[in-house]
Image (cartoon, rainbow, N blue to C red):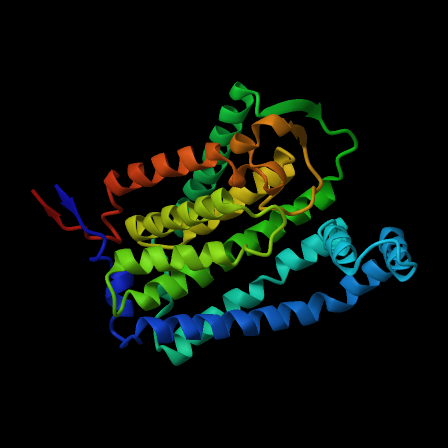
Length: 330
């Protein structure tokens, strides 16, 4: 049985406007990314600098460097660590500011590429149901990874957090809803679909997944296995979108994966600092191959196993008949 992902309404609508060569598409993607980075950076620069300059650890590091006690390289490493442990309000602000990427992509696709929003996956048909199903998928997949790590001893449950700040937790939830959507719109709804106008969708899927993983190269604790897992995450999200014919489920899956990882289970999200959390988990340093170490579970083989299985499952799963027409040749 041959299963093709080519015939979806999303891709058909996108192909109504002529695409560019792959290198041009990548260059345009890079420009969009640079503009997004500049706008987000400008918005958080002042509060982050204020936090840094008033941080006693930062002051001590600078004084040590000026006294000749540490090298410039050592100072840079320490400053990077301090910058990676931002207070909750700055992390939440940065999550909400990812909406800039969503706006940029919509404006570019709608007014420059002349694409309909539905070609990006923003379809009206049962969008709320699709979103809720995607949320359950995200929670379920990450919980499965946690289960593997608990059974193998790679993680240890340390109990429920005391004095949980539910307001902060709610703000993180809302922030991750925005952040998960922004990355899906940027990497899949815009970039993957745009490239598929001139190259096979499978190639567009792989290239967009690699670019998605590359966006995390500056994260704390990034390693080769973490990069591979991020590529697998991108492939799964791309296949999910193509199978379902809309972007809603993938947005919810991405958002809830991140939220339950950081704010329910208390595990680092792709190298991010610890946040307000419901549960407390500690990693077994002797089993970093499974738990991913400082990067979080996304840097471990438990995620590799789960997402490899999820991709295979999605490839052979029934498609959404209302949105997707998949050719099957027996």
